Image (tube, rainbow, N blue to C red; front, side):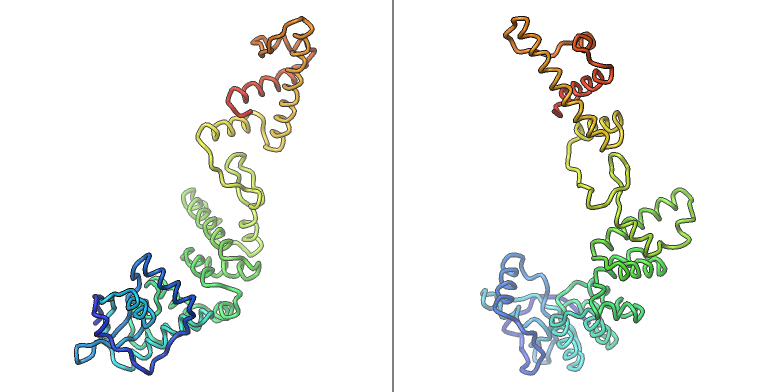
Length: 334
């Protein structure tokens, strides 16, 4: 039986012989600051004794910190377990904190779970969430090839966590193979999974079964993560050339209008540049002409653009550019 409640710190007995994780002064101060700021987020783990006291299984450093802070009571997971299981939980907790190898942690968790420890007890012992425990238990079910990749550091737990979202053994295997072949980071794996899930949902909605027949090959998967679709021109461009848009509705509509009117962005940029230059030249010619006529006031663009263009000897294409720049200026873009 397991329950969570607050107990008196003075009722907790800390065994002399127990596994202890190495804790630096810096780590101690960080944990103390965290408890002061966020409170006691992970209960300690204890087992009840016959005399009404409790034997500590895990949480010695947390107890010391709250003593320093003047606390009298502390939240605890109370598990009714025997000494053998309590010792196993204690060793497990400190093993989980002291290793960088996720498979060692996963196998220790599995051993304790098989011995009867619940997911809640394992979460309290390791200082992690129940979902974290379930994820690590899942690692023990992976093929040996992926277990070794986790030990070697070629895969991280995040790779597995993201791949599992595909919820299909064939798709998961293909994603992990691609990650190993191309050396993907966890963030790249996350992007791949998001794109693949979107493609699968779209294919199902459209009744297209071809995309569901097999997952992408490593080469095809690499294409998926290397390129992304621009939300404005809808071209596929390298992802490092994509930018996160942060704009108002008016600017968004204006950009879509410019692309719709002018075309492909590179061509549009050149056209706008030419138009700006032509417009500035037009204004200079106007100002020069007005000065020659003896007017001292600042020249304002006149409504009759066609007549002015004709007077300056501008072509129809030049006239179109001037109109475009006028529209952009009226919209506040330039």
